[in-house]
Image (cartoon, rainbow, N blue to C red):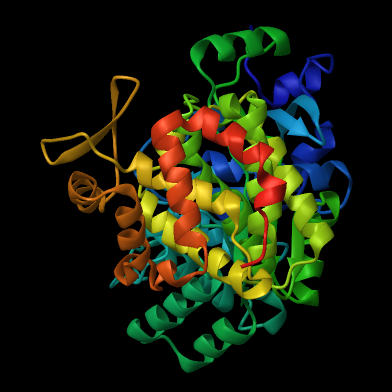
Length: 510
């Protein structure tokens, strides 16, 4: 079986993958990308390939491998080509698509090919820098940018920008649009601050620092797409048999895409690939998208994981196959969390986002375990859901019953039955599960000595956990207590069914 390569593209147009036209393999290099990971391949690189196919962006990517781990030989053997297998649910319909992405022109190693990377700074067609160096990558460290290469990602980027400044004699129109995709809030703002601080620490000229700050734009961005990466061996073999070629870089991805980028009209013009996919959004404020993701996707996960797990469903998809648990998740998200978002949200936009999230939860190709979601349960509850709960009360002055049930299930999930080797374990149908939460010991003590009603009030009153006295919310402690008692007496499945049947009559003002 042949291997995916430029030669295959030119000789085998009938292969099953959506092969790119040969002309796309000759497009100029317009993007420098720090990172070779699957998220970059599954989102930005795919989106640029999609734009190129539509004749919009017309540029390829030079990829920098910053770390020592792994190798770049597979990219070399395949001429930067890789297949993206897109699987999932969109608008209630199952999607299965294979696309050969051709946006990567070459992959260079920072360790052994730093001179080649710096040489790209003199390319007048280069306009964009993208990065995903994990959260650890955007940190300020002492770094000498004259090294080959500098130690840190910001150091490497600063050295590259200095080379560009020198290559074009400080021309203002040769500044770059820099879009970090690391999963930290205000990633662009933090990266720009580090670049400026490192420039001062390296005693760089004031003229360069002015060019760095005024000619370049470092944009905050938010990415959201589940990209599991390489499939298991059996799936890989089956897909390669279907495609008719071998692919060492075969990457699996969900259907949903979101890349929200904070920028002005110039950024929008440079990032012209925005026009190729509705999932790419360039606008001056992206906080709305961060809030929607945090409250509706992450917040729903957090308030559902204990209940769904205790109901006997190990994964998100299995829970969505159960009418009652799926009904709870739907109502929790759209009836309680959406109106409680502490941000101005257009209801139709919020509903649309919520329905997309529900499609993602139903994806048969992704196995997302509730136990994994339950890690750091308490911290996630505080960050993702407490602001929503408080805003719901401020806005509606009513008890959000689905949130109350989710909170009750959280308390029951945190009931440890034994402690061993510094770890706490709960029990479900005779089987232990690990409670991976730094407050597990606190809950172990409470469950050992308090009855449910007192336990609920003690936990809700603990301002060190929540930053607020949640026991003061009218009707909320009583509602959580009733649900906790029902969970203890009847189990999670029966309690969910009961909550759904009585949801209308319970939604009363307080």
